[in-house]
Structures are given as structure tokens and as C-alpha cells.
Length: 304
Image (cartoon, rainbow, N blue to C red; front, side):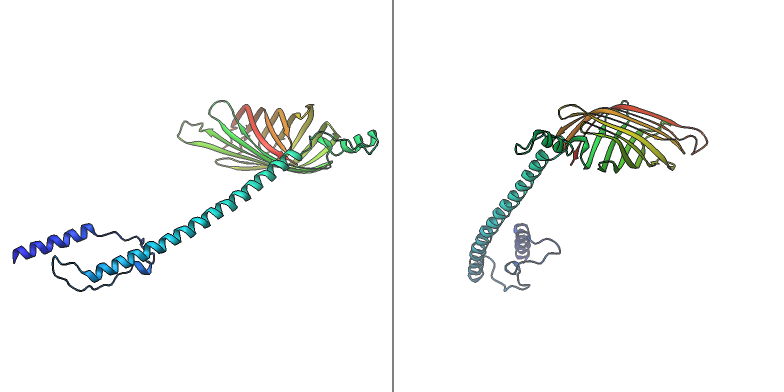
């Protein structure tokens, strides 16, 4: 009797070790072919159940044939889906490249031979470069400032021949001034109305006015903002750009930028030098705190 119990326990342990783990994950309904009955007819030890073997063989054959057909269909659908997605993405990329290459304000002028030379040149010159009647621009710049300061600038603007609107967001990350761990983060936001009082094909000079906001660690300040910006063609698609902005109260902000912009269709690549001076004028604790930041910048944008 003890020998029979030992063999029975050994067989049970061996069956648990050799049992195939369930494929269905927790909480997921199993397939009908994977469900098993709760009871099973007892068989003598050492004797195989032929009926069960036949059922298993037939089930395994059925599952293999079904899975083979399912895999074939799923592979075909996956291939078709990949081709469709790849085609759509390819068309979108081609369309974007074509649109960027064939739009913009600094395209080469094409004179219509059917019109008098003077008329054709005049009409085209008033529709291109810095004298365009409508222009939309947006972009971002990475500020490579000296020291441990980091920053990024984003801008967007819509401008007609004389008037327009634009917005700027400057994000700054600075080391703490008290020696503690972490960093101080500042966000400077500007919203301006612009007026171009000098408009030429190769030149645009505009005045700006609006509101600026400074989000500091312990205070939020809002004040009036004014500025002047300048764009001029230097050589072909290369422009010289300059901008200065001032917020006199309740905090002092002086922001100046000068650099070059390369027009590649609608795509613009920018680079230059930028400096920012900030003074809270004692609005937090009665003691004035200043920050002076300057260094090169690199960026890109789109102009339509």
C-alpha cells in the first residue's frame, strides 16, 4: 500500500510538471477548442486512453489546419494594410515636400512672356518676398546660452500687408540662485499687434505693441510690451533679421535678437545671437533680482 501511494503521488507530481500552461491570459475568454471538461473518466495506471488520444489527435489536426488558414489570411491582411499605410504616408510626404519646395515668399520670379516685361516684373514683385499681401509664419528656436542656462523659443504670426498679430513663448531653465538642488523655470509670453510702416520687396520694418507675461517660481507678472522688428534680403534667399522688445513695468524685460534666415521654399533655417535682461524690480520681496542671459540660437520654421 505505501508503494502504491508513492507511485500515485509521483505520477501526480509528474503530470503537474509536464502540464502545458494555458495560453489565455487572465481575464480573457478562452477559445472553444481550448476549454476542457471538469471531470475525466478514470483509467488504469500504465494504460493509455485510446479514445482520448484519438480526440486529441483530431483536435490537434483541426486546430493546426484552422490556425494555418487563419495565419494565412491574417498575414495577407497585414501585408495589405502595410502597403496601404505605406502608400498613404508616402503620398503625404511627397505632398509636403512639394508644397514646401513650391511655396514661400522667396521663390525665383518667373516672368510671363505674353505680358510686357515691365508689367510682369511689377506684378510679380508685389506678390513676393517681404511685400506679400498675406503671410503666415511659425517656428521654434533652441537657445544655446552660456553657462548652465537652457531655453527654447516658439513663435507664430499672421500678417497682412500692413497689419498683423503674433505671439512668442520663451521657456527658460536656470540653476537655482541659492545653491539648492533643482532648477528655476521661467516662462515669458508675449502677444503683439504689428504694423509694418515700411514695406518693400526686399525690406519690411514693423512696430509692435501688446502685452507680456512673466511666470516665475513665486510670482506672475503682467505688463505692457512694445517692440520693433526688421527683415531685409541680403543675398538671394538669405535674410538679415533683427528684433528688440521692451517691457518697462511692473517688471523690466529687454529682449534683443539679430541673425540670419535662409529661405528654402516655405522652410526657413535661422541662426544668430540673442540676449535677454530681466529685473523683477522688487515685486516679490522688495529686493530687485536680475538675470542676464545671452548666447547663440538655432532654429527652423515655416513661412507661407
